[in-house]
Amino acid sequence: MTDPDLSRRALLKTAVAVGGASALSACLDAPGTGGPVPTGDPANKPDSQHAWREYIRTDDHGNSLLPRHQVLLYATLPGDGPPSESDRETLESALSVLDRAYEWSAEGVVHSVAYSPSYFERFEDDLPEAIDLPDPTPLSSFEEPTFDTQDILVHLASDRAAAVLEAEQALRGRRDRANGVEVRASLTDVATVDSRRTGFIGAGLPAENQDAEGIPEGDHVPEASPLFMGFKAGFVGNQASEDAVTFDSGPFAGGTTKTMTNLRQRLDDWYVEQDDSERIAEMFSPGHAEDGLVEGVGENLGSDSRIDQFVDDIEDDAREFGRVGHAQKAARGNRDDEGNVKLLRRHFESTDDIGSDQSVASLHFPTLQTAVSDFEDVWEAMAGEDLPAVTPAVRQRVNNGILEYIFVRRRGYFLVPPRRHRSLPTPRPDA
Ligand code: HEM
Image 1 (spheres, rainbow, N blue to C red):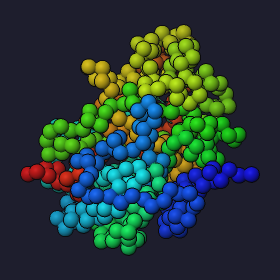
Image 2: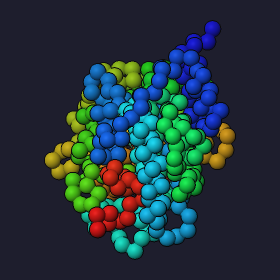
Image 3: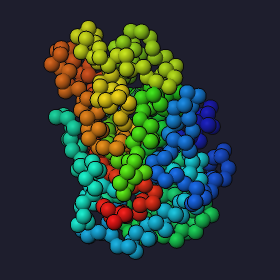
Image 4: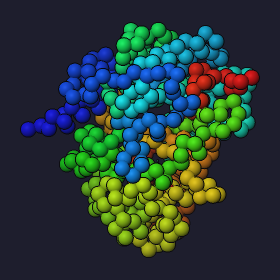
């Protein structure tokens, strides 16, 4: 007999992926969806749009548990010029509907509005020099992403599928009320949604949604895994804090930069040709496999992946074991001079296939950092183009972390302004 909890979770994830009014009603009608969604107090929201950590769930070790359902809306303004004051007021009014309708939490909706370098080109002024926000670019010789250069990226996230869908419908002008609050204005009054993308994260959801292109048949993804590849990620000890990625001065103080990459996953060989120990070696490091440091999905690691003790061994590992780990490689680029972690990663899974109806396993990979060049440095360390020179056993995509299984499709860079400047800011909002 089908487990009713499993079917309910699958229904909610599918509803978010499909979107629209009927998907929203299906969610609202689903049994056991958790009662009324808490409403919000507009005066009681953090200054930073990316301040999520205190407002979402954490596990017993203090690791953040990202909201289970997420929607990304990439939107474009008309024409080439800057938006008007009245556009700014309209968008602010649309966003303040969400402020009132939903608590700033995973039980309500957390959200952010971010702006691309192309958006800021609409203005005569430049962004302050201290803001490092280049155009997106390929970050290795073996990737050819499509660049997301739309003006605006809206990110909505909630543990409640119905809330995230309803918030989206309100922003797109398709509802008169959101959680009881009148919808007076919408994002689509000022911009056109060019691309809608969705995703999910959390134990159970990847296992239920493994019937997707890129994942071999046979229920390989463990029920306990928050991600398709079978391990948990985002240990608090391996993440930058929100404070560390927040600008502390300038007109955008309280804001941050955000990168968003989408990667297709092809996990046949990951699951079919490798055993647990090989997967641990490629995901973490050969030392993690040898010392038996990872049990199951890695819950036993607690609050830190313990990667720091293996970073300096990477070339020796390549020679001795003929492979290197993904986290081991990435960590090489992910510490500042004082040893602090540079990036705050918030990645989640997807089965969207942008542009067709097929389910394709992919990862939405957002990172937050004060300077986009930090992200680029970490990506280059993760791409490990230096390692094939150490030993022929490590090739560009083989035995080189998880590069055999992930393929970059899209990338965009954005500025996340502080809440006070979230609506169509000029490059010099305090001027
Ligand atoms: C399907 C794709 C991916 C999966 C399943 C994945 C999974 C993981 C896991 C399990 C860890 C170790 C635990 C942790 O610290 O979070 C990790 C670490 C990390 N990954 Fe990934 N990852 C993926 C893609 C990427 C990509 C594309 C990058 C690009 C730069 C990246 C950057 C990092 C970084 C910076 C770390 C932390 C290393 C440190 O301790 O500093 N990951 N990842």
